Amino acid sequence: MAKEKKHSEAKVTTPSAEKKNKRLDKKLYEAELGDLQEELVKLQYWIKEKKLRVIVIFEGRDAAGKGGVIKRITERLNPRICRVVALGVPTEREGGQWYFQRYVAHLPAAGEMVLFDRSWYNRAGVERVMNFCTEEEYREFLRSCPEFERMLIRSGIILIKYWFSVSDKEQERRFQERLDEPTKRWKLSPMDLEARRRWVDYSKAKDEMFKYTDTKQSPWYVVNADDKRRARLNCITHLLSMIGYEDLTPEPMTLPPRQDDVGYVRPPMDYQTFVPEIY
Image 1 (spheres, one colour):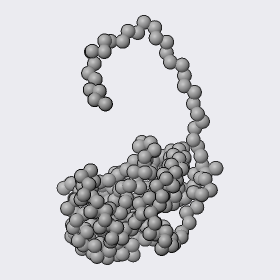
Image 2 (tube, rainbow, N blue to C red):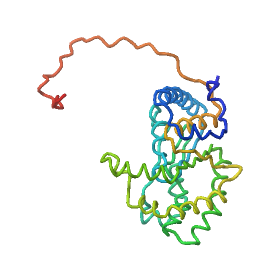
Image 3 (cartoon, rainbow, N blue to C red):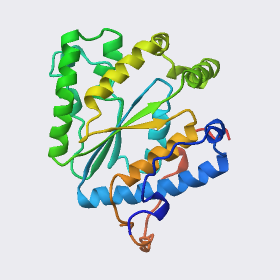
């Protein structure tokens, strides 16, 4: 049948203070993640077979862990079925389009799941706080967005929205970690630093966005992201619970015999350019 019983229903619980303060054990995390990734593969087969169209939106504070959970979701999936959309700054031409137009181009076809690493909600977040849009454009977005999403849902698209919530203290720690670690420094842009300075403005913008777009047809699901490991497991478990699926994993295949080598002569090895074997 569909999922293992421990993943068949997302439970809403309030963690104790002790649990909140204790990081999830790494070995437990890796074991649970492996199980969940197996379930994601089953979900992938189901989406392809039933020609479902799925959109999953990931929004939240900078350094809240959106990219981490997206990476764990896609790690073992076929990129032709599950793809990530992370759009950059709009071009001049895109700036003159209907606001939702450039996102429509990336919507899933039958048998696809699209993960939006940030989405059309940029207008209610960074564009609003940084004054990259006018007040009229912002208000029009708040009016149009619920209608746009209802239209997607009426068309048969499954739309799931996650907001990753991280505390002031934890975001500060992660920003500092990025500053200290050269391989992570690319994650920290001047815009991130400015967003850090405007923490309260972003909080107000998020509250206003939820007031208009946290609808019955398309609710926001908030992920407590102070512990990255818990956040990843909780989000993936919830995602699996949102789409009823069955195990369509193909049966093991038997490899056919290789073609007989009749008269084939391999060209000399020095005809080819090899990568130096340093290791």
